[in-house]
Image (cartoon, one colour):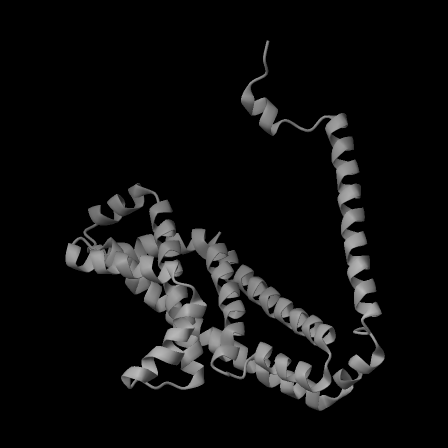
Length: 266
């Protein structure tokens, strides 16, 4: 007699399965450690781990320069996030609207911006717009393209959250005499936010990463300043390792902040 599919999928693993899992985990860890050791050895052989490539990190001017780049990154990412969250909501409302003259342009904008790489949008702002007389500062030539691309994705994230809200919530709100706007903003959207916090956090992390395209417009963000340090001190690996650690700390801070923000909703 065959076992039900639910028992196969969700039953506790057998002792043999546990043993196989442990062996596979040990092998995977050993392979990963071997790869890390090989990479470190190659860096050492190339001289990238020599003390002379690290000594400038003891200088306050180095950290001041990286700090200015980090502030530039955060300034661009924060503004892009604010614009994307607001514009994404506007695109969502347009996509949910009943009139076709409103819905179709919103759908077209969402699909176009979602399918266009952020780097290409940055080149449009940097190379194309000045040709038609629209000149922006480097800050906006980086921030606006990132916010536009992110807004389209955020609009779809919002829509997924709205569709996840039980239909009964909308019907109950309408039965109380609330208008469509009141139903959406007072009942549906607040509940939708509960479902989409992780997805929004993921988009915020992507926004921070997209600011690394600042080199295209020579905007002084973290990666651009890192390239300057590499050019001056010929310390490719040390600088990229430090900058990667800074990006990880920023993204970890965003994740922790989102957990605090999303905690009371659950």
